[in-house]
Every structure is written in structure tokens, then in C-alpha cells.
Image (cartoon, each protein chain N blue to C red):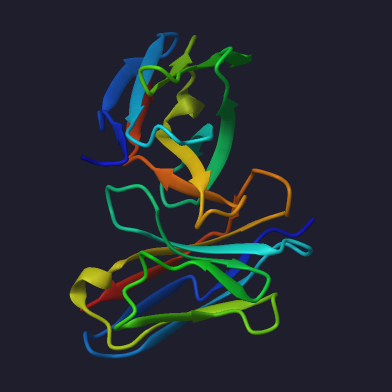
Length: 113
Length: 114
């Protein structure tokens, strides 16, 4: 079974620029999550989707971050404009409905200069 | 107060040692508990779930004390390959739904040396 796919794996941008990350969850997984992991910290949930609907986006900085999952499969996370403190690894995870375990993708490592 | 708190370590132990990690959580309504392992520059992976009755998986033993809101992980006979960051994770309902929202501790770094 293929795992969670993410791209790009690495991205370097300058502050105030825009950036987008893509995630393809495990086939059949209705729930999709985006996490931000800053160096030395555990992952922090940004947004949770159930199919194409948002379940929880309480920790998403909505003035600059946006995410969508239009067809209930792939998802994109965008930052516009980026700040230095956005430098982190952005992890996507998915979960099969009715099961507890979340499976993480390899992450996108973002550096904002 | 952080929702999930761990001793960040680092723990530096010789092969064969026994090492214990501790974790506390603040949300008494939390429902499920886990330990995840994260290797350097890799994604987190589920190590084991944690139950009130305690559970064991080979050299790994996890314990949960709901009254004290305390979770532990014990690793016996440490191997070089156990070197990683161990994340304490607590799950609660998101927005009143049945969908689990994971809250991670900051992680405890373990290095096992020859």
C-alpha cells in the first residue's frame, strides 16, 4: 500500500514570498491533517479535513495560511506571505475513518530567509 | 501550561540499559494515548498505543495513569537502533466530533551508544 505522498520535499523562499505544499493521502483515507513541526518541538496541528470539509482549523493562522481539499482526496496548504518564523517541516497525515492510527508523509522542509 | 509535557532530555545511555520516559497531559477529557517515534529528519511513526491496564511490546512497556494524567514508556535492553526522538501523544475529540485530534509533546531525544 502506498504511503502519504508530499511535495516538494524541500523549499527555500524569501520572506514575503508565497509557497504551496501538496499532499496525497493513502487511498481511501477520508481524514487528512496538516501539521507544522518547528525544530525541537513536536508537530502542531494546523488543520483537519474530513473528506472535503474542515473539522478543525483553530490553530491555523488564517491571515496568511490557507488549505483546501476540494475533491476530498489531494490537499494543498499555502502560505502567503511567508514570515521567518514559518520555517519548519510541514507534515501531512491521513487516517482511515473508524481507525485511530494516523500515517504521516515525509514532510516538506521549508526555510524562509 | 502545555497540553502535553515531556522531559526533552537528551537521554544518552549505553547499549543494554533500561530507560524510562515520562509525560503528563492537562486535558482530563483526553481519550486515547500513544507513543510515536521520530528518527532524525523523518516523519513520526506510531510506536505503540497506551492503555490503562498497561501494555507491552517486546522490549517496550507503556503505562497510563488517568488519575494522575501521566503516561510512561520503558525501554529495556536498549539497542543502537532505538536512538530517536520519542513523542508522547494524546488524542481528544475535535469540535465535538468523534474524530481524533492528536496533541504532541515536544519529544524526548534518546541516544544509545556502544
